[in-house]
Image (cartoon, rainbow, N blue to C red):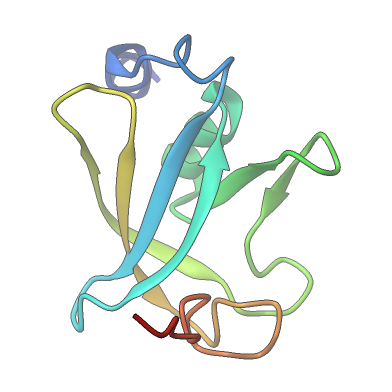
Length: 112
């Protein structure tokens, strides 16, 4: 647990009122799958279980991605940005990432 806490304590959760954005990317294809938010507790659970855990801002609770749908995300690597307030989670995705059934939550394009 010591190594987990060392990793977690690097992250600046204060800027985001206890939450940090977590960009989830497929570890082989590099496709961006989703964006969610992590609390300190959800990040610790992610390290402990090897699957992604997030904090739902609408439900105010932790959620394990894929626990209900079966579309789990197995964590391969976690990176932190230069400001220590955003995470990049590289995963092996078992199924789709988006609740709409799309592989990625970023399936819609805006016209420019």
